Amino acid sequence: MLVIVAVVVGLAVLVAALAGFESPPPEVPPAAQAALQGQEGIAGDALRYAVLEDCITLNPQGTSSLTDFRVINCLFEGLLRVDATDLSLRPGVAVDLPDMSEDGRTLTFTLRDDARWSNGDPVTADDFAFAWRRAISPDFTSIYSGLFNVIAGVEDAYAWREAQLEAFDPAVETAADAWAAWQAHLDERVGITAVDDRTLRVTLRDPTAYFPSLTAFGTLMPNHRASVEPLITLDPTTGRAIFDGTYFTEADRIIGNGPYALTSWELRRRLVVDVNPHYWGIDRLRTPRIVQGVIEGNDPLRFVQYLNGQYDWVPGIGGDLAVRLLNAGATDTVGVPRAGLEYYAFNVRDEVDGRPNPLADVRVRRALAMAVDKQALVERVTRLNEPVARTFVPIGAVPGYDPPVEVDPGYDPDAARALLAEAGYPGGEGFPTLRLLYNTSESRERIAVRVANQWRENLGIPVAAENYEWRAYLDRRRKGLFHVSRSGWFGDYQDPTTWLDLMRGNDPNNATGYDNAAYDGLLQRAAAELDAAQRLGLLRSAEEKLLSDQVIVPLYQVLSVDLVADHVRDLHQNAWNAMNLEAAHVVPVEMR
Image (tube, rainbow, N blue to C red; front, top):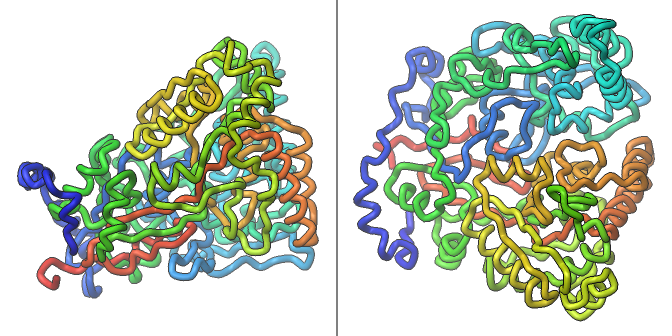
């Protein structure tokens, strides 16, 4: 490992003080040792990594967080999985890729008979059907429920349940009767069928080429129905189902079917997973334990603890530290271009926190966008010279898709001032304080400060940059308590819809309040289009509409800077954040 003197000057005392700060991982449990006995390269060495923000939940159907999904992918496995080495789809719980009908609408997955939950129970097709149905129910507000809309009957079923809940009258029917009617509706109208224990049949609304890749994504992973279903209770006054989400936070309760099982989770400090001895693919595991440490909002401390040998991998280094490490050419510093972007999202609702919202006017949003010098951000603030983003779908991320770069207004302060004056705020006069929301991070704070200054200087408007820790930030975004929100999105599967669906009017990830029938209509037409080229053309038109309405300000495409110790092998990194941590190999200390 190459030590970067410029970074660590002044930190030597801190390094010494931190020696022994965290004790080594405890011994691998006997069950895991027995399961792994005789395998090469797993002599009890854990893979340890450090993050800035802890997981929020390990509920596969209840999150959109990269940090959550990194652990979820250890605890659960979908029908298929993505091979991190080449991004190809490989069998997971399914024995192979699905059998497909001639019209491309019916996919049949056959489950392997040796797939087991961490308690030894067999994984069944019904476990998948149950999880997917839970995700599409409006009762549970799954963040990624929109992914299931390509399945026949899902959108109509969602609307049916919402109408049922709206009309629910406890004097007329019980919550149990209403829930039973909802389950019957799912059985009859939705294309998710557990034919038998080992056969899952999915009927799509239209042929969808990327659907198999969705089955490798966290939201489509199964639930252990026998333990999750009893946690659903019914509110007798509203008829709505309520789920006890604490199940997915407690190591002694959560049951998974992935390569690892949750051993412990000390909130905001440390999370540990150990080998699931019942996992069907245990012979391809290379490390018996994975440890996630949490060092909230403190990249320098993560770096110091990494130098001190407490971590083997530090993903997503930011700020000055990332710049210095890259410039120094450290052998353990890896810059990975990601299929994702950093952007600012506008709140387009008529009101924010009960007050009139000037950003409801597209002219104001366009003026704000034109007053941001993106090139200055990547050259002088992030200093990583990331590609400036001009579109929502990152350029080059999806083969065959040509994002509408021509819609981007560019940096033009004079035109921005004229547009703001046209909207009724000449020189910023009368403009209320603009609330810019961002989550705690050195690099994000620097960007927020620079953008806020650009808006003050170029437009003459007052700006308050509001910094919140991760959970509070997400809560305020969800409630619409902002004018502008720092946002970022990594693609989940290789199709433009992984970005464009975020701005559907009913998508749970859409914090902007944007609800445009023309935009949603273009996405719906694209979903029904069988010709691949025409489909991408419709998606391009949808993105053009979104950018013309200036719902977001794309800032730059993401370059992730990671520290990976020389003794870590096969931590394959790629643009799509597809990682197979179970395949990583930590060289034993005595062999380094």
